[in-house]
Structure formats: structure tokens, C-alpha cells
Length: 195
Image (cartoon, rainbow, N blue to C red; front, top):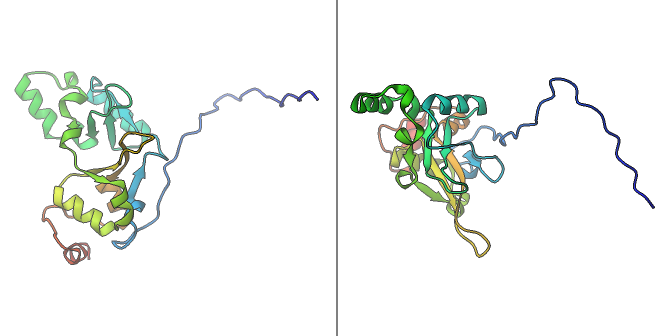
């Protein structure tokens, strides 16, 4: 029996492409599962840029994609590092302009990015067993605004960046700013700092 064709129609003017939306987790406490503050790259497409992109172009890309950090990728699927919004307008670009005697417009993402080798990472399996308080302690211990979450290699696939934890996202979900100037070493100290 022949199959009938599906009905079709023409697009109205102004039709948009559906955009993937990250899973939005609600408020958390320090005792909540740590996985609730991770952006899962198996569910959300990673926002990327190239090392050669100018700082202004990278900033525009962040604005259009609604993110504050981009993965820097020379050749997919490899990752060179990350660049955060603070890297684009912070002291580092101004320092480079002065040192190199170049214009700000001539700086590229490669000039200000944080290489992968300088980033702290945590294991996905360990994260799944952890709570938000442990994530806060880890952010405080290393003093970086981002932690990468690594999924170990398996017989079917190589190790990969599974997710990212952002200090800003953790603060948003906790409903409080995190103070990272003093390194809290115990869960009780973290709770006291957030009180």
C-alpha cells in the first residue's frame, strides 16, 4: 500500500529556529546534590569560539548566546581552553595593550584565554556523589570562577568534558554571593560564610 505524503505549508515571515534551552534547576542548598549546579554538556550545546576571534567578536558571541564563558576550540572536538567575560574586559587585555604596544581591537581570544592546562577539573562520578557545599569548597580552594567536569574514558569513548560549574551559577541557585577571598576548609566554615 503506498504511503501518503504529509501535508506541508509555507513559512510565515519572521519564523525563528528553536534554540536549545539549558535545563534550569531551581534553588539549591549546600546539602543539595552537586549535579544540580552543573551545566551538562550532554544536554546543552557548548558555546565555542576560535583562538583567532577578536575580543569584541567573542563578547558579542557571549551576549547573543546568553553565556559568560566560551570554550576555545582550534579544531573540533579538541578544547584549547576557556575565555570568560571577565577576561575580555579585565586587566589582562589592558596590560597586553601596554606591553605589546598594540590596539585593543588587535587582541584575540588566544591572548587572554585560560589554557586547558591551567584549569581545575573534577571527575563526573565524584561530582554525582558530592553536594553543593563541596562544590563551593572546591571553588574557594582553587579560586577560579569555573570548574570543568570530566567524564572518564570508557571502552566506547575517550575522556571528555561533560560539564562546567560556574561560580555565578552556583551563587544564583544558592541565592547568595560566595566570598572567595578567604579559603574555607570545612563545611561548617562554608555554612558560616553563607549565613
